[in-house]
Length: 608
Ligand code: GCB
Image (cartoon, rainbow, N blue to C red; front, top):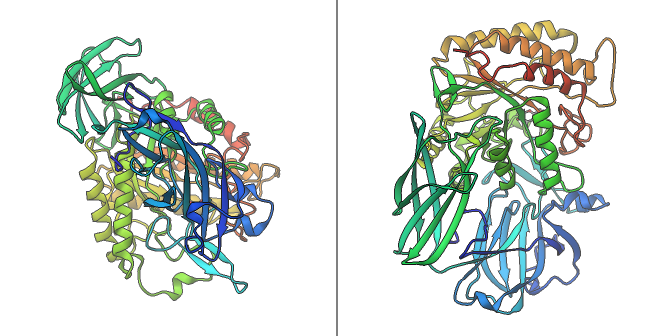
């Protein structure tokens, strides 16, 4: 049951108590916390909100940039009535590594900063009393885990993170933490897969439990009427005249799973799930059999002060902005987001390309300008001594992501890497492993892809064939041939597209990134790079190219909003490619998109 990634819900048999709030916090720069017994309480803590990144809450630079071990602590009460059941603590995420202690004893560990995990504390907690939770965390980057990066020690002895990726290495307990009470015999997993037959839908399901009692599954429509029932750990529910989940027209059935013993409910879990199919056929994305063109964003979990910490008002505002502009899709670049984001996508009818945190798998783009490291290092990224360890961790993240997100109607595809090295044959075996692993795990067999970097072209990329649809990150007119050279950028872009056209077979292509850094404050006539006018011209050129290739089936601009990155000469306090500012106000380009996307039929470029 520790492995179960079901969402925390209160039901007839389950209890969830939020542990969010103001916790204690302390840096452990010498890693002496364990030796000093900090698991029993932090000696000189400061207060720290959970959930939040810790970084932007401080006013001194050493704290913001802190890299190394750090601790959280809180006290929690376990009701006496829970005795005889199972008690777990569920972390929405802990970035990037955590060791968890309750009442001074180690109860669990987790590696990977963007997916949930549970620790079982049934025998360790004191019932009807307060208990102490401490968490030893670490935010150092390495090449054995994703996202990839490295840690540098400055001559003053302080450590700093060098991400091989372009977003700030926010860390901490960034998502909710909950105390769970579950029955001893419990539902550990529930999986659905949909097929349509005329007006009806068949929902095949699998339930996993840790016991032998009977299992029942009920589906209710939005009015609360039971529309189908079945029993057994595996079965099918026939839903007559099914209301399908669709883009911007969500419809969610409530599936309730029970372990029963006669009339007694041993365990109960429910989820609100949309019924839909998604597949690729003849170069088109088909949602419920109908073509859909993807329009939207690459995004980040990123906002002022809380960093990557879950913030429901920001999520709400983001969906309002995405609806206003006419988007229907986004990619969770470059890591799986908080679960609340997917439930909202289900509610709002958005399509999500769910991305595992496999970013930074390329030496030459090491933090953009990390001194030509790529040229000095001869070995390729996927044939290092550390590659087997990296692969194992990458697969574990894929497993956790698919296990967590597999039932969301909104999730239509898996993105398994962002901008990895693909120009050497030694990349291919690694890709083969991760692609076949994802395929094997997902019952719905969603299409898989990865985001292909600019240098990986039709003649150099050794891995694009693994994709069910190809996702291009392209910056013609920005990183390449920018400014007055825009006409040459367009020509070079078309040349590359023509070459893809010759080899693509019938795979659809989408753009998972294209964009230009733009200052909200900057206007210039005629345009210069970084001005709002230039962003519009850049986008117009890109859209002209997309529109002339019928097999381009989607456009996700980089980025939804300006976001924080590591400081450096390539970034002026963050990446400014947002169509919205970091405060979620529209740049001029937002109106350009609104005019384009609102006038685009759902089946743009694939009308019957
Ligand atoms: C990319 C990366 C993304 C960066 C973006 C940029 O290709 O995938 O993480 O932020 O380019 O703006 O340079």
